[in-house]
Image 1 (cartoon, rainbow, N blue to C red):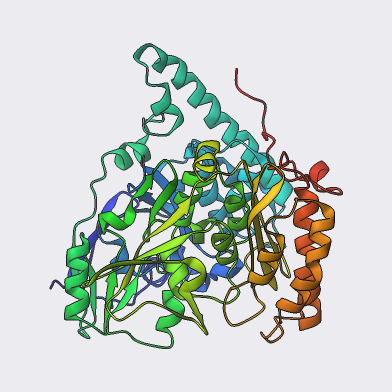
Image 2: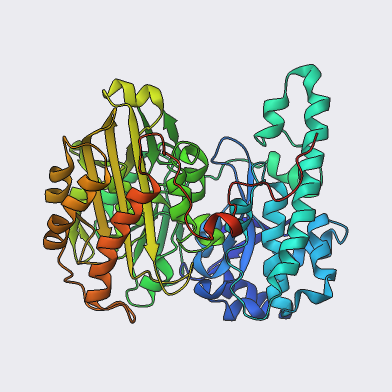
Length: 527
């Protein structure tokens, strides 16, 4: 065991020794220098205090904004961290720093720093081109004082300038056939002090850290080492992204923490012909980047889940292990027919996501068992044909007091697989109605074998009404009667947005299409 570790902060090596294993980055920064004092007041559900971290676990190096209040210092061992203050001081001419000079964004200096962080990450994103993506990048800006329109205008100019640079680099790379490396971010086209450091960053080492109170933090590199540590410390708390951990530590002081963040097998995304295999330690942003092309519904669900800095840390395995009864992703994962693969010293077993939850925050995980990966069936033409299907219609809906950074009243997800026009199989799932996510099995069965038509849907509504009982107490001001009505109306909305097998992409209703235009580019295409 060691009592120290190092990480890089604003380009300088920083040694942490004899500090508490429960110290957060926000606490560390606020005690380091007066200019970081605002980190002590950061609330992740009110926008938080984002910083930048260098990530190398995906297909290409990335800068990710993360919330400083939701990460423990040992989780940053060997990491590269940039504060917005550090970015502004070290490179005042950086394009993302220009936002600080916009007087009419009308927000505090702390919020300006948060804007800078989100702009910095977005500037280097190789996929940031559409309105929906910009909304997702900036969705932690919940301040009522910030001039969001002015911020968005500045974002358009900034991200368009990055796209222009990427286009020019692609043209230069054409001779060597490296255009794909440019557009996927595998090639450093910016060549500035930040990307130079990111592209030479080494993977983190294994860590066994102990603080002065003998509280331990372990970070194994293999599943074998993970199982050894679980056997050695049976009372240890397993952690992934850690976004739910800080709140838990306020109630329970775990003596041992074991992080899966550097277990290589749990950081992989494998794309097979018929399904994806997503490691339990993969953050939600990387999941969306991998499967969002075939499942835009997952991207849609993520826009209601926390904020960009939270999603950059929260993992799919960690989300499932928390087993929230109001979680926005569980109904969709059920509708996607996903499965979990569980690992222990006795071997592996798997189960459908629906059977994973037991209620009241409990799951089927046994002592010494861990989620190794999540298996999600693919929905492309080839995968559907191998299952004897012609079409898969799927969508998810969340109703809450506001769009993001809040507890939803109810979430619903629906899917039907069709052979021509006939329903071969259906999935109807909800959260926010009971002490765990639930599935409407009887209603699903009533749809099977029927033509996907308005009459079929309306004939199933009585079954759905009888089957779904609201047993969870009121959520905010959403009482049981209101949520029961949502169960019915959201299922009808699903049909009317997907009325025929050709309508895989939902038909936008009312003013939504006119004002949101999520799939539209927010700047002119570069030619």
